Length: 178
Image (cartoon, rainbow, N blue to C red; front, side, top):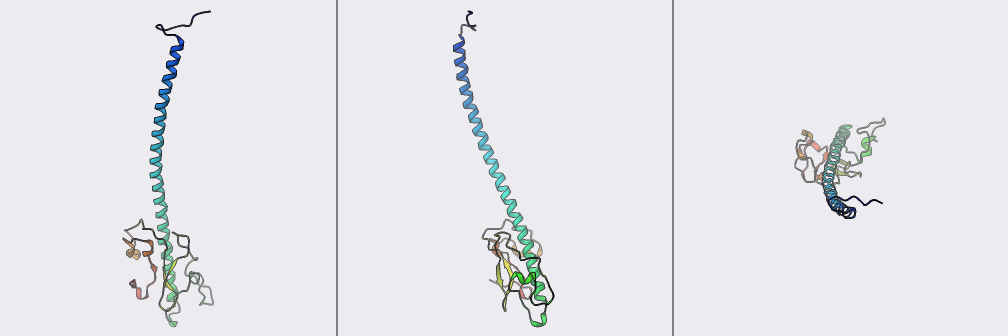
């Protein structure tokens, strides 16, 4: 039997032990790098999540403005019909979908929309003489959009709550004070 080869007087057993010790140190170093990578990925994913949430919120705000404008326009058209009987406001969104005052079907909005922010019914703004002259969201959050509104929504600038965004057809075109 041959003797094991040695390099500079080292036996194979001693070099194997050293290799094992070196791999433990390397494993600790790799573990630290893995933890660092997880930490960096966590920070990055938190930023991506926040950006995604803002994008979703902005899309809901855009939908709120679109639907609110359609409801306001529907209320305006509803009140302009049958002016000889005096100004009449709708009692519900369903009356804007299908006008009960007319023998032939008349539609002022396509459907009875839900509030895009909450998914629930809108809060109504009472009209003089009954019915409602507008709607607003029940959502409590602060709008992301604060500036650069179209002229129809100029009053929405710098509002602290979605509840301050009122979509209404005001009598004589003037907003009533709270």
